[in-house]
Image (tube, rainbow, N blue to C red):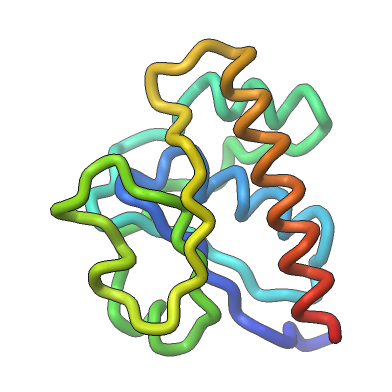
Length: 133
């Protein structure tokens, strides 16, 4: 089976929101080709994010932060997760971006990260519904 559409989730550090979105889309709609990236990626995923995803049975520990490249943008439907750092906000570099404006889980406690996780899960579900029409 070939993957139908390419979906790119972007944020600044690519260690939290975009990684959760990538994990959800892989789990909920494996027919899509999904990747996440950041304008200033950090070396490893946010441990609270990986813990919260593992609580619901989605293991994202094999996903790695990646730097946003032009070829990713031009070949994908791009979703900007939100920006904590306006100077390196992906939506400044991407045309026709879908902007979800989701709070960054960085430095948040596990309860707050669970709430962010729920918001991302709902947004990914809605995106799947739109893409399958």
